[in-house]
Amino acid sequence: MVCLNYEPEKKSRMQYLRFIIDNRRFLGFGFLLSFFFSFGTTPIIALFGGEIRAEYGLSHGDFGVLYSIANVVAAVGIVWFGRMIDQTDLRIYSVLVCGLLIASCLIMSWGSTIPFLLAALIGFRLAGPGLMNHTVGTSMARYFDAERGRALAITGIGSPVCETVAPIILVSLVVAIGWRETWMSVSIILAIILIPGTLWLLKGHGERHHRYLERLVDRESEVTPEGRQWSRSEVLRNPRFYLILPAVLAPPVIIAGLFFHQVHIVESKDWNLAWWAICMGGFAIARVGITLVSGPIIDRFGATRTLPFYIVPMVLALLVLAFIDHPVGALFFLVLGGASTGARIIAVNAIWAEIYGTTHLGAIRALVQGLIILAIALSPATMGWMLDLGVTVEAIALMCIGLLALAGFLFFVYLFVSRTPSDRPPGGETAVNR
Image 1 (spheres, rainbow, N blue to C red):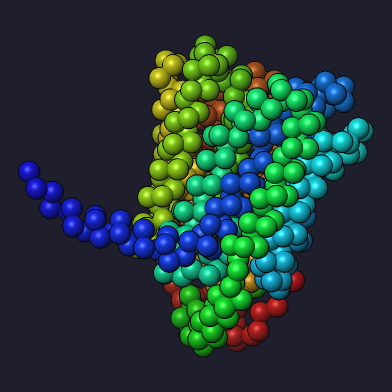
Image 2: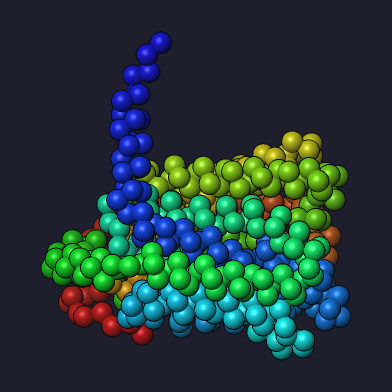
């Protein structure tokens, strides 16, 4: 039987491949930072939790408090330092951010007191999922227009790839040479690969930035809402921003809280921890697959239209967690959660440029990224208190579904009110970041 859609699908794949070839260096830069920022994420840091607690004499609660403090400080730092990407050469900004991650690895490797540990944790959270992630999302959304979704999708797979392969390597190194020596080794590898690789991949970026500025001048003269370039202070005064925000914050908060208490989930469901670890591979595979598929969809339909749909697989995942105790439930929960996460990251990275423009995109994304990390810092503690009070995992899952339903409702309210005349800042005044 002949597939009637073969030619369009083949053409689409060829366009995807051509896009990668034509922009291989800049996409390689995004993938490189996306891959290595994972060394500052919770799954990687958690691998060393036992060694860190034993070395510093910390309880689980003590370490959790330190980690929450680090996240709060990092969230504030992202809002402050993240906006500088709008005024700083991308090459300089990227090298400084990568240097912060390397310095954090060094502090973790030789620091011997609690303040040094806290400094390392702050550096990890600020540099990794904070500023490096921010750099990738801002640069891809800023310098790509019609193919923004594809660029974010290709670079976005770096993080799940790292989180899949890095734990195996790191655990092996800890066994072979010790946990401090492992962090020293990581810092050396990053210094050798990350900074030189970033500078090489960004070779010729000045010309790319010049072309972007030329496009921006043309866009500033447009009278359409999409052509208006918003500043961060104007976004904060825009009521519609707060209709979008819950849909952006709720899913990562839920995933972070549940993953932080994953051992309790496994035990309460009477699942096998080894089986859970195997199913985590399904989370990574689903995340990568949906990420690559989401890019062209966003390019065609726009992030604003597609963003609400990533909530659907998350709701299904929570329904599985609430009502299925069979071990297959772990697989469905993680695969659906991975699919939602992959789609969410691409849509959220693209939506701010789509709605508010790219002139002050760094400042706007820094604000949102800081809010996400702050919310993630509070999520594990909140769910932990609920579990201590006797609230079941199933009840928490249903509460999370209610939170997602509210977030989805508010976003659809945004879609409805956005059909009315634009609420862009009056008078076309020059936007100034504050």
